[in-house]
Amino acid sequence: MADEAKKKAIKELGRPDLAEPLPLASQPQPVNGSETTDPRDPSFTTTTTASAQPNVTPATPRAVVYDITVPKDAKWMPEKALAFIEHVLSQMGGTAVLRIIADKTSVRWQMVDYLVEWENVEGVVKGIRTIHPEAEVAVSDFQHSAFIQPFHRLTMPFTLGNIKVGW
Image (cartoon, rainbow, N blue to C red; front, side, top):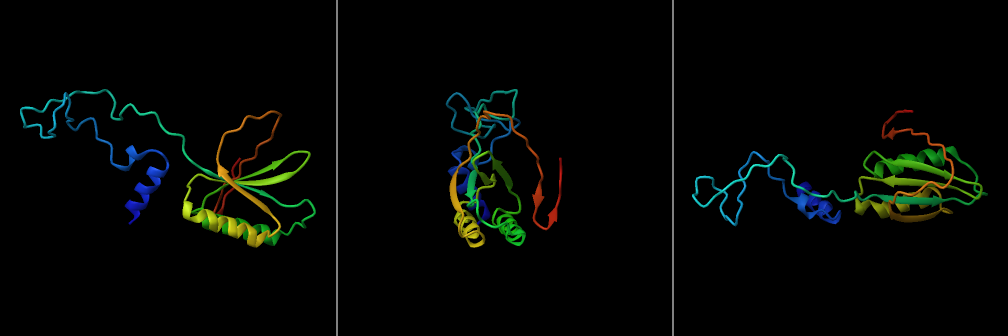
């Protein structure tokens, strides 16, 4: 069952070639139109390559971004924030990237899920709305963006059940 889900996820990522294991360079591979993989067959010919990996351009990994905007007049409630983070981590498999985007006009939270489990996307959105009913939630594919002004970044990895802080 897990193998089927993994193959489905790999195909959804646009890399159906990864759904099957890659051949190792040490294993003989048929070339020149040979149909057999048995090295004892006289029609079998092999070639030697320098790399164990085929010449494949890697696809851009797919990730989901949850962009959360809470009205400016919403009261800060730390209990809600803690419940929110615990729920998000449980829905995202125990890991998540939380970004706080602030400028002179607004403050937004963004969560980036690199381990996209599409069946949980709606669960994450429902959890956000349960904790912050007034929040606007937009879900989109992750895209790298250019920084047009100076910024400050603080990285703090969190995991479910064990909070770790790193600089």
